[in-house]
Image (spheres, rainbow, N blue to C red):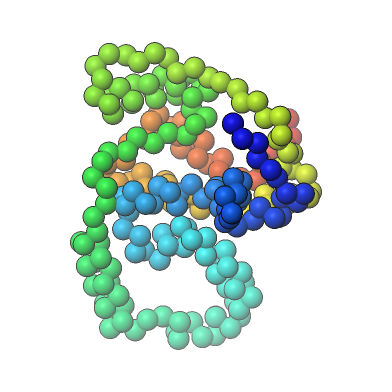
Length: 211
């Protein structure tokens, strides 16, 4: 196992992993990898904004120009003819869309540490793999994080903010788009949805740091 060389400031980890870099904020965009399976059409504007993280730039711009947008609202909408043309284009793209035919079993890694969810995960794996015998119980485990940082430290605020944005985008996309495909199965749905909601929350906010 190779050691990961971290920079002096986590601010330097923002963005893509370059030059064989092992750690960067873009690695938190887990939904980008899932999107490559082709289970969604990726033509819906909202979905695109979730996959590329552009909605935060748009929200900031909307806040800055709110008064202008209210006055020119009618000019920001497509005409009826343009709307119909746009709808026909999206319809054709959806019809031509071909994703990976394989079925997908999705779980949140923390489900392994939940005894009840872990049992359901084992059952789901048996069904997914077509195994008629029970699998051994999935054992919980602990990671040795000798080089861990405290993400709640003030020096990591910018990185943490971006990670929460990535987590929020991923959670929404997974729940609203990916898991709605007929070939995507979720292990222990109740547990999965509860854990996914955590992805949208800053772990260092006052309410979450209170014990």
